Picture 1 (cartoon, one colour):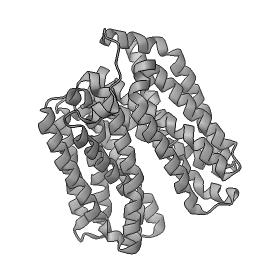
Picture 2: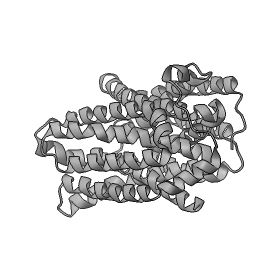
Picture 3: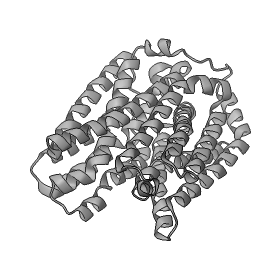
Picture 4: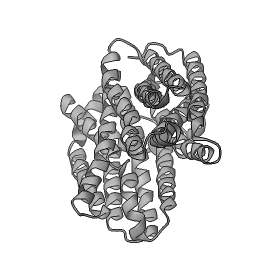
Length: 388
């Protein structure tokens, strides 16, 4: 039963990633048919992000009341319904409306699943599970691209992913008794939600929030602007830059697979430091005048270095803050991560547009330095150096 539940959680993480790349891959086909400017994709993204942040902050209360299994099942079902709503939308305002449950579903399941894995499984599974998220995030756009290539519309692409999500939701509802058995075996006490104000006063809370903010700001900025940097900054053709722009995410996905094995030897704190060191090496390579080879090598190294940071930070949460506080902190961390995702990549876009795309490496350097200092501050406050 334990192995069956773990398999279901792995599939759930693939499901988490499936919708993430859909909007970007479908938007070139969407905005013309909806008769809106290309920039309106940002409005939908912001609505989704606000919903995700809100549900992340509510995840502690929801998970304590319903349990991780039920929150995951309901959240996946909510996301599936929202994706179906996208498929049947023929007006922009309808997309904005469906973006609300889309975001609300994503935040709850992210925080609930990460905390459940942190409490019940080893660090290697956290790394491999986040690798599965990368698989889902890669497969989603491929599904959309395939359907568009075969002559279908973007609505059919959303419908296909929605059906996959509905099937997974049904599996999750059927698996609820297994979740309950596992949770009961792990703890005799009923979980009690931690008020947000109190959670924010726990030693290390503000430091971990800053760490997650900077991490996702760095990850998403590097990923979003990789192709533009290779084209405008390194002089590659647009076609070559588009192909090589995926090196960042390839490095991160491969790195998370490898990290699962390395965590058998190193604790979470060491893994995070190792990852930040590799990111630093990648940034240095970007800063050096090494041409296009240096540019894509640097991006690949940054992706590889990012690989263990997010999963290991998540897995260390119960050890950093106590199991009784972990769900509350997991929600706060997830919310902070999404705030960094929403704010910092667009900020660099303005810098690139009005100053220079060549400032990508210095921009990432500042984020990396702040993240490193906040993480070390967190380690001192929590005295956490041995989490496996």
